[in-house]
Length: 106
Length: 113
Image (tube, rainbow over all chains, first blue to last red; front, side, top):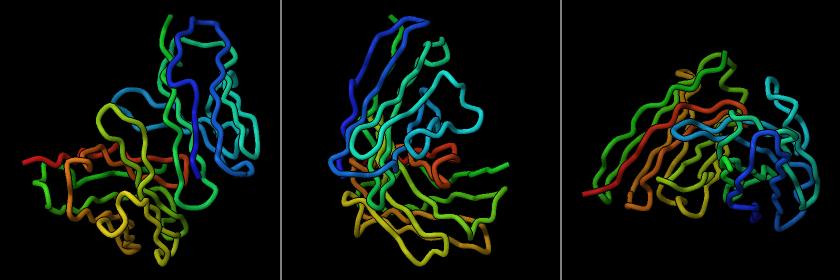
């Protein structure tokens, strides 16, 4: 299963609403996770099962979608949110990641 | 608290081998599937292998199938990844992970002469 993530990068300002999209090459139901990664660090889980917020993750993050189309939304971008974001399909093996979206400061 | 402590990386010559370790604590190790994910320098994440909770089923990405072997030692609560026939394309930070939510700190494997 291929996962196509877009955009590959974006520039945004603090307070902006940001949306990142992942499309799967076939129906993966809701078997999709979203991660945030900062330079030199391991990824951290933001959202699992497409729309469930991981404990401790700020409520400005939200995930939606099912089947083949998924989105991660940051409702009001904060300084700590400048990072790279990845989606991962976990509908069986092999699992695959999207190509990543780097969120930079405008 | 779940902890995954990795070891075993380093500089390896092309064609060489290395075993990576991931020592787990804070959860019942034999009740969870585990995975390995790698990240080449400046690149994205690549899922490479997973093993079932009981250790009897293993899965691999095509890029490592036949060269890498994943295993679990329940007596030591440790996950392993045996790397064989290494090439420069295997140079990456390797992460172990428990389901989706817990990751090791990563260990750098550099394949170079």
